[in-house]
Amino acid sequence: MPDVRHRLLPSPLAGGDITQGAEVTIAPRRTGPISLVVSDVDGTLVTHDKVLLSSTIEAARRLRRAGIGLAIVSSRPPRGIAEVARMLALDLFGGFNGAFIVDGALEVLERHVVPPDAARLAVEVIGEGGADVWVFDGEDWLATNPDGHYVPRERHTVGFDPTIVPNFDGRLSDVGKIVGSTEDFDLLARIEEKLSKQLGNTASARRSQKYYLDVTHPTADKGHAVGVFAKHWGVPLEQVAVLGDMANDLPMFAVAGLSIAMGNAPPDVQAKADHVTGSNDSDGWASAIDQFILPASATRPAAAGETA
Image (cartoon, rainbow, N blue to C red; front, side, top):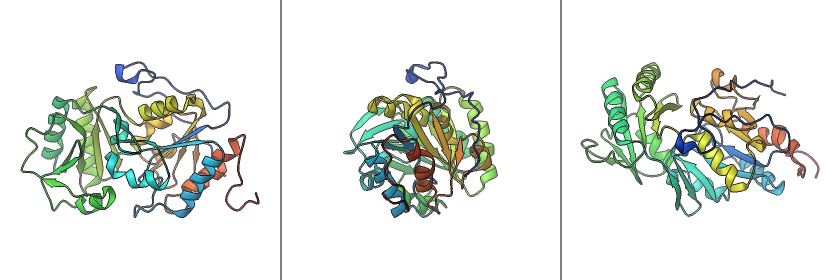
């Protein structure tokens, strides 16, 4: 069994009425059965090649049979995770790191955009820093460089093409997410540090991958999404388990009753989780469900490999 990790609970996240900038609310340690699972997508639910493994789909079915809810939240735009949601028969999920909450028909139930002044600053700092800039404006993915190194990967991930524009003038008033992308991971880390300081409380800047820096609404992060999902299911936060692999998943770790890091997560992310499972390429998600979540269910179905 992987070592139990202690989470570092202090966090800039708001809890409760999060959109009003309330103080941090940290979930109590889990005292009852897990009733809801909230998962990240890339690096967690799907493989490096963006494949949803059959073992993962079967584990999701075991959750459903146990009466445990399942929701996903991703840095992708909502329509970029719609197919994953369909394959898992989900009726609620979050995009843009939780800034947009949508139903299975992609109807937006809640939305929080990047403040325009913060969006302009982010575009300026990322561009001047030497990374490619992408702007997700409503349903559109806007880019100025069609030959950017990660354009093909993002196209494969979200399932649609970017709209190439000469600049982002007039397109920064309704932004779900701004992304900085580059092959130079150290450069992106420096941009993240600089931009975070300049943005202050006006927007959130966190890496969703070592090559992607996401700028989103300042309080509507993945921790906020967990709160929305918990309210929808009528579940207390201490009965929510979350799975993730990157720094932008830490807001989930801070508010949920049980946190699980993937084996492919960086050491600093693993250190903040209660448990560490296998990697996303080696059935880590399904293993976490069977090892850490279903045993906590009062109506546990047989795990993979067990006799029902």
